[in-house]
Image 1 (cartoon, one colour):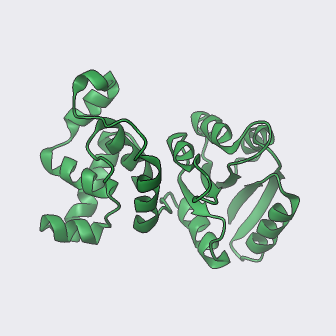
Image 2 (tube, rainbow, N blue to C red):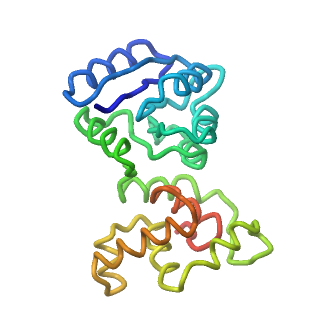
Length: 225
């Protein structure tokens, strides 16, 4: 049974999410929070599989709540809800440790599938959404190059662990390419690409493709179009 904590400052939104999720045979809502402080406290107390987190809330917003939940080292994974086109904070929420993000206007069945994926340890940011994220939130960031001066010691160490092929694969992931697309582009078997991605995640110490994309932009392996 997948346990979910719903975090949203709007009562009707929380009620809607609860009704949807509790209609699923494999899900249960263990609690509701109206702001970030309650979200952090209730996550520690209830240890849900997934925290469905709104970003814009009074008091402690979803970004800081996500950061605190991720920093606690607990088992709960955060799935951020965003309007995306209006919400300039989605990128920062992912940097704060969210497992992925979902659009609030997504179909109910898509949200259910996304929650199951996050609970299973996957990332729910599809390649198309990754492209939109990168286009929206990196064009205004300073261009960064593979210059050790601009990188932290940890970033330098992690980058040095990557082979040339792994850097190519990571750059392609950062552009939003799927494993199949990367395989075709680099003339590799898709299973080989999956192995490369797994090794990359381990070497740079991130848990999913979203965090890998952020790392790639931070160290300059990828740049906005």
